[in-house]
Length: 435
Image 1 (cartoon, rainbow, N blue to C red):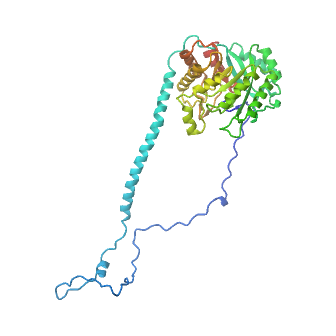
Image 2 (cartoon, rainbow, N blue to C red):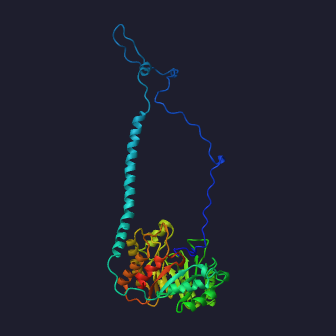
Image 3 (cartoon, helix red, strand yellow):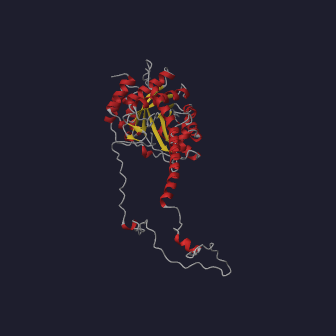
């Protein structure tokens, strides 16, 4: 969910560290090169050289005879020999000339570099200031849970690692909250769109148990995969056969008893027509079609700029988000992993995302804003900034400013196995308004 199409982070699963690199061997080390002699300021010893040969027919010019009995006539060759030898400019003069040119180039390079930094930094500072301002003010009264919230849950619930006792505890956790939908990870899909039934062997048991112990809660199959073109080895939605296989997999899990299917295909580039074609084909295959959605451009066409710089567009245009929202029953914005370093900036960002999504989502479609129920510190996500209280306040501010009375609206909690008691307490206190 980022995030990754199979973001299973169950405590029972561990990541193996990368193997350490072997130290270089002697064969890998290049042989040392001989050191050239150090330069010296002393001139080389003078060497006698034979006089240059002259053509016999050439006349040798000589100066006019000097007056006086003791005058001596000196040939030009002798006169030249007595003068200091002429050579290239002294080393000191040459270095000074080169240094002056180098400093000039360096100054221009520094100015260009500073200009480039300002071009990037000034819009960023303006945008961050706007986010901070977006976090100010008071949410309207009544902007709380509409009992249409959702929760993402890991694969352990469908592969046999969970028990009846776990379902009982889950039902108790959900009591008196606004959670209506549970997304149980039943995938991932194969890259060709198929889904082996061995991926969810305990699905029927789970669905029956949840319906018995938490009546009214809908159980959805969470299916995902990585997609091309950004991941060329993964799922290719441009292939009709692959899309047909995804539709067949959807009918398969619905046949197993799931109330609906929630898709998380990433990374999906803004404007992907093949994804829209897949959604159109999925509508008749499931009674409830739900999707996880990318964030919306925080600045106009920002996905194009970011894609050019990094190769990963990350955001969707607001127009494309609306095209997706009109094709589904439920859309959940993955409003985390935002790169914001402060709670106030993250909360302002969520407020902005909430407003942008509300503006283009039909009132008949359930719109859910994601809450970060996990704690990581890495580029793109800072646990001290992306908190549940900041996200909930941002959601309420965006809802208040755009469509405070929207009925089909809620939050989606990511993810059950990484959540802390503080996360659940904040969700209840700030959004559900229960102790």
